[in-house]
Length: 183
Image (cartoon, rainbow, N blue to C red; front, side):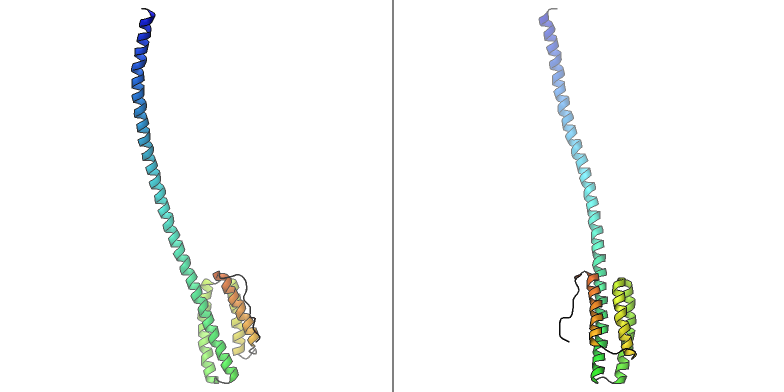
């Protein structure tokens, strides 16, 4: 065998292996892409499922928080309603336009509402709100029992303290409001 024949045999062998190699390379590349797409689709599906579950959990938390916040606001409004009615009756009594019998009836209604409001507050309010509410209610009870004199400035001070604690709790503003009038 001469060198020409040896080169021809080697070139023929390389050509046959090279053609098969190209086919094997092309098929493996194609299978790799198909497999990668399938894996990517599975990962995307799993991530989308987790994302939807997280969105659902967030929606539940949001609704629960909004409901709780709304309950707080309704309860705090009830406190303001109860106190404002009693203060109006105190003013009417001071002016002599409310009889003793009417004042007693009004105080009885206030007392019922006060106890109810306390229970509502105890379920929702932080201790700072409870303390401010206790101070105001204690003073109003002392006035009703004639163990303290009705002083509008002191009532206003205690009411503003309660309102400022409520504002902090419901997130309106942490800066206190104040009375800037002349009375």
